[in-house]
Length: 276
Image 1 (cartoon, rainbow, N blue to C red):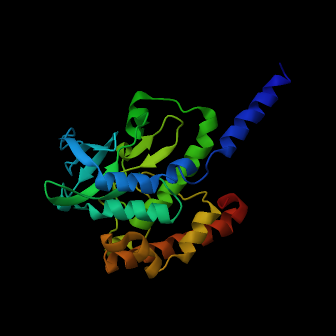
Image 2: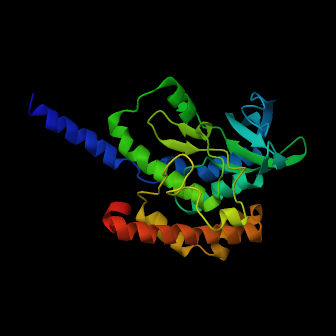
Image 3: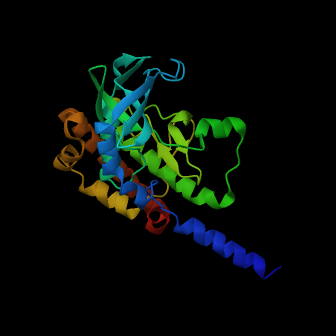
């Protein structure tokens, strides 16, 4: 048995380290994003419901059942805008978050497009089948397989970098979807893209985070390089009309904050321990 155990551990580690280190949707899934965007835009709404109470979802989203060419899928639609539950909401930010996640190669946000419901404009996001939310995992004390922890932690660091970039001030546990293989998908971005000084002079996730340190401890080199190349034109090309000029400028200010923070962190920890 002493010969089998190291071999078993080798294969476990091989599986763990061969999984995607950045994007949480697989390359096969991201290759179909455009197909699902068209589906969301063109499919007929055959059922609609508001299954979530206001305590669960202040924005009162709709769960739609869509059908096109014999394919049936569910999607979440919302047209929240203005102050709701004490926060400024905007459905356009849902679409901008998806487009920016895609442009940066993160691919952690489900396909999201604009679609009309009851003659109203709103965001329509593909509903992703999942094993549980992070909230359910914590409440039910579900243990994560040990060989999944490595990639889960790296996904967390990416989530923090992404939320720092888009100024998502409301990432709670129901907004982390956990798939069957323990990949992480991020939903609900209608409280993002803030432009006030509070969100353009400091990062949300850092050493002073209200619940303790929440650092961008490890990040893919490709993601950091893409951050460096972001400019007004490239962000505008990615998000189109769904961000104002001021909101794009605020994204770029936060990009600079992230890069400045990373520079200092790398000097302390060493580049090989921070970038992969």
